[in-house]
Length: 158
Image: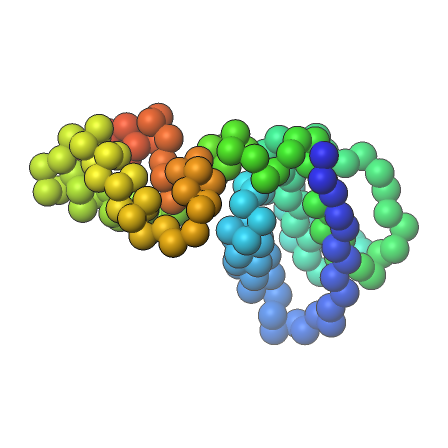
């Protein structure tokens, strides 16, 4: 289990009210890419009494934290997973990145079958990787989709 806590405090400007949701989503997307985790919106509170805006995210493998925090002027980000996050099995749960989805659409447009596209993609990943982290790259579903994911991309493309 790995955990850490982030608390962000920020000034609120009335003209920024419409961009809170977009900024939250953008920050969490970048954070997810960096930490190799998936975060799901648990709850939004656009008219919350203590804050101008509040949005809660949970890890796809986590249980909602039930504790109450008394500090009302702080935004809290708690990173707590009940599972290990830097292992091959966890990497297989990641969502496929848009660029990889576009690569697979290109493979399918060129007439490749799903299995052929998967092999071609893995060969390209292995040949482009300079370090010895090939096993980590192949396990990472963001850049190397699982069988279920690439067949779903193929069905969507058709």
